[in-house]
Length: 474
Image 1 (cartoon, helix red, strand yellow):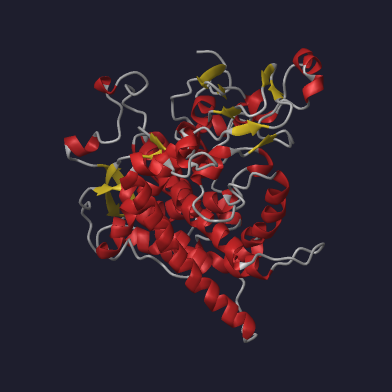
Image 2 (tube, rainbow, N blue to C red):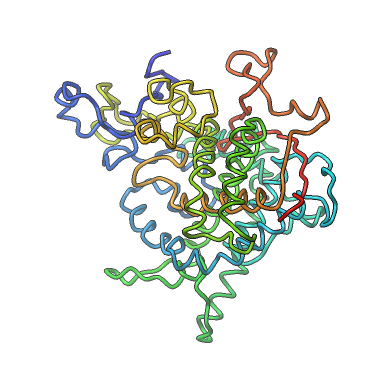
C-alpha cells in the first residue's frame, strides 16, 4: 500500500508526517497554492469535524471534542483549558495519588507477603483504575470499581459506548436522522450497543448533574469551591465576552472528559505493562531509575523528579507509538471549494484522515517500527525523527487537551508500581499468551510480540496477564 488509500467512496486515508503537519515539498506546495495549506490537522480553515462527529454525539450540545465549528472549538478550548492549568492539576493531585494507591493495592499481594500474586488481567484492572480516577477528578466521586465488584456492572456499558462511537465514525449516515429519514438506522441494527451506550451516558449525566448542583449551590452561598479541575472551568469567564459555560455546555464537556480520559489512561497503562513485561532490559532500566530517583513512595509526585525519569518516559512514549489509543481514523471533512492534502485534491464534503497506527509504523520515520525500543527516544537525532511522526493524542489545535495530565497520570502510576515491587508474565502458559498475535489471526496479527488492539474508536484489548510481588527492600 502507498501513502494514500481510498477507504470509502468519499474517504481517503493518509500515512505520512506531511499530511499530519502540512510540510510538503516545495514543488507540491507551489502546485496547490490555490487551495491553501495542505495539512489535515493544523490551522487549516477548510477542514472541520463533520458528520461523523455529529453521529457520535449523544449530548444535545457539542463539546470541545465534537464541535464542528473551529471558532466554537477555540472558544470552548480556552475555557476547558483552565481545568488543566498547573494550579488546577496540582489541586487535583491528592485525588490522583489516592486512586493510584488503590490501584497499587489491588495489584500487589497483601503487605508482608513475599510470594507472587495470582495472575491479574491488566486491561480490566487498568480500566477500573481509569474510571475511578477520572470520575473522581470530573464529578468529585469515585466509581470504586477497583474495590467494589458490584460497581463493575457499569463497565460493559462503558465499553459498548466506545463500540457505538467507532461504528458512528465509520458509518455516520446510519446514526444520523435527516429531513427524509427520522429513524437512526444504526440504533436499530446495532440496538444492544446503542442502548448500552445510552445507558452509560445516562449514568454519566446523573453524576454530572449532582456535581453541577453542588457547585452551583456553593456559588450561590459564596462557599469556596476549591481549585480542582471542574471548579476552575466553572468559574472561568471569557475576558472579552464575560461568558462562561451554562449547565448544558458543562455537561457536554464533563461527558467528554469522562469518556476520553478513561480510554486514554486504560490503553496507556495496559500497553506499557505489556511491553515492559516482555522487555527485560527496558524493565530493568525503568525500575532501577525509579528506585534510584525516589527514596520513598511519598516522593512520587508530579514535578521535577518525575520529569527526570527520562527512561520511564521513553518507555511510555514508545508504548504509545506501537500501541496508540486512537485506533479509529480521526476524519476531517473538506469545506466549501474543497482542499488539498499533499498534492491530492479533496472535494467539498469528502473526508480525510491520517491513520495514527499506520503512521506510527511507517518505516520512513520509525525504523524497525514493530520493535519496542525506548532508546529511539534517548538519541537526539533519532528522537526528533520519531517524534515528528508521533501523534497518540492527535495533532494541531484540536489535539487532546488533557495530554499532559494523561501522561503524568500514567507515569505516576507506573513509577509507584515499580517502586513498590515487581511484575512478570503470568506463569500459566495459556494466560501468558493472551494479547499476543498468532498465525491463525490472519494478516497483520501474526506478530507474537505485538500487543493486539481492536478498533472500537479507542483501542479494545485483552490482557496482559501479569503477576505482582512486593520487593523486599523498600
